[in-house]
Image (cartoon, rainbow, N blue to C red):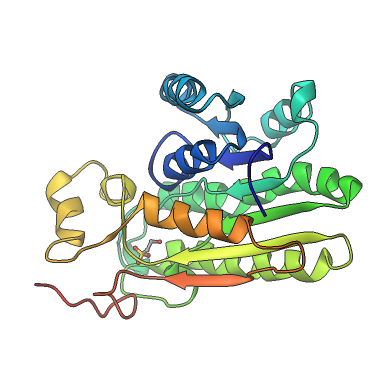
Length: 255
Ligand code: 8X3
């Protein structure tokens, strides 16, 4: 199946995996609805995609943690985007690696509000549209942290375990509506992820990937595009992907 001419929503599209998905899907002819909090960055990306690939790109400044904002903005899409073919629930983050006893309450809240509730808010608005169309594909960006808990991972892992449960729940409950649900669960991907996790500490962020050839956003975009272009009757449910040097959340071979 081709993605050309299809309408694809990507949340958290201003950087990292979301941005990489936007670029690859646009290169393959998809029209995009991109959301992020950083609207200037998003608009720059949109301009470059429109001129490079001649596709339609609609940008929305959105904090997925605000349900009223999510609802209002998705319910007022331009007419040419009334059909939604693919939703990539990408917006998410990790904050900190403190032990549970030292956890920072505001970090816990921001991770759960973004990774879990934000994904639910977006899905709550988009799923009825997909049901009405009797067609669609939800791709949730999970994590290896949804399969394994590692030291200091506690609440971030909990959020990604939740995403995994939600993906499975979506797959079960949407049975019969011709809606595919895919969870892509990466290990180490070198993006702004670790910089955000370590509150801007570049040294700590760099150390995460030291001596490893990590995944990059493009690797995940490649998998998302593969999942989104399988034939109508094929649904890739769960894809776990790590760098070759990473065999589990904690087992990493460093050069
Ligand atoms: C990102 C992967 O291992 O840092 O979700 O949790 S990990």
